[in-house]
Length: 308
Image (tube, rainbow, N blue to C red):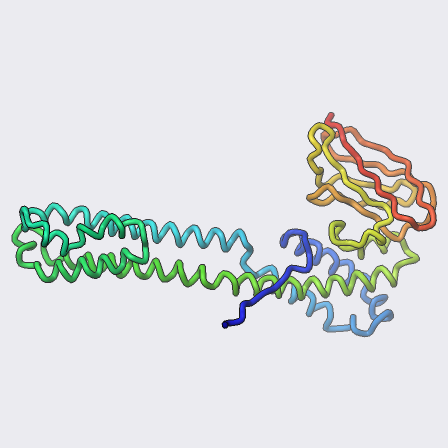
């Protein structure tokens, strides 16, 4: 049995959010590069360029949306060719019945008895058109006598070839989708592993610097709950819809973050103490919360925001 390519994504966020996060983390890393090299020589050149190449390679892979779009385009071409083949046969019936009036056995030679079964199946349509052409060649004299000439017959072959090409293009592309998916996931995972390595090192290197520590948190949905000392979900009060890009700020530390597409936010590396969190988003009433962090135990603070 042939081996099936399998790959599992190592992250849950969307590809575009991952690319955005990777480029941002790489930018932070570039600024802090000397500190990283002191921490681990593996981060010395060409690490920065290699990481960029990994991100670029991943981003260049066709997304699921692109694959779906291409599949639809190829399907539309197949449908167009199918319709042309059906139209060609239907138009020919006038001349066939004129040349062979009241001769249903000859009509069946042309495919009358197979057409209903064939007309909706693209793989059968190619064979149908080839057989139609062969019979038309056989009776070319009679067809020509009633106005269906050599050019009309030749077009049957042309349409059959176009139908076959469209069908093969569609089937080949669909058949390659598992490999496309495997390659994309593999390349994204390589870039993901690099980002995780940098963020893991960053959280160790800057554990005494809560400002820089935030730089090396993974996207909230991917970060460990033990790391995110302050975290939570921000939603619209009216219907519970997650709110993205809410500015969440810790007043005492002058640091802030944004909620992600799922309404999640998180801070890490924060010393014990009492803090005031503000939640701000245009079109909503700003929310303020007092939060106490003790013994480094994570605190979950969910917020419902009311529209203005």
